Image (cartoon, rainbow, N blue to C red; front, side):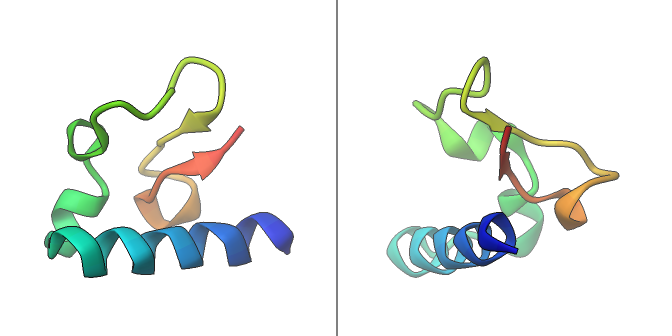
Length: 54
């Protein structure tokens, strides 16, 4: 539950700052500088395709 709430808040904050499209929010290249090797993950089958904490 905490991760879902955090992910939702991060999506809102990032979207408001950058004004990116929903489809871009599901694309790892949108999140340049984010650590997808050890902190974040992105998978179309999980979290509605949005990035989530590992």
